[in-house]
Image (tube, rainbow, N blue to C red; front, side):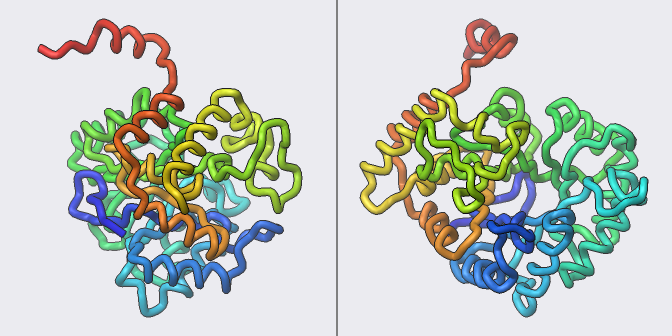
Length: 340
């Protein structure tokens, strides 16, 4: 396992991060607390130091499982959690107000059995709370030692740029990490965000690197998964981000075929490993979140760091999955970018 700087900070994170969204879920596809602890310990033993969760994952049970698993090993981990979504029935149990952020962080610290959160994300946009209130609260958490670094997730590019401008103008703590959906079958952030991350010093931490399991290679055209045992795509609604209707397209099947060709060129490799290796080769990426449900899944994903794709293979996968930019990006590509 190698380590990379998280954005324009001195914090080093493992190139793979352990995602824990399904730890503690009460469903047929959930990971039991016992299995989750084994996964966490194996990840740490493999050199991973970056664990990602959120205060709303499994209604807080994910954080509780992590807290128990890290007893005696907390010092080995860059621990990330999030705040934004609803944690209770009250009108102030949601959002990015000072009230909700401070209460949520105290609850997360208790569940995680720690006195500091290494990386706190703004989980999404809050249209009601002024950005300055949110950012000043994050800044207070850093200056008082309850949070070490801050990050952002799932907001528009202009919202992010506005937040950074407010931080700069008021000498507030800046975001160093950005967590967005990114994979061979979901590359929309390249239109605006990846240049922004590079210019403003944010490390990209992709979620959904396997497209909800689509890039694992276990699905076939015309055979929609229906049972929970068939993976996440079987339980997603059509309106969800990682829905079958978003994945089962002609373009995506062509991408999957190209991934399969690369797998054939690397005996012993898997579709998942190739998809992860492509992401790790992208310049904006600091750490890729893997969502292992079992130890078997974890071992498969961990092997991706040993897979070396050639420049030609990376280029081929990039070409088959490339998006056709609309205006003004097409115009800028054709007329606006010139080497002088």
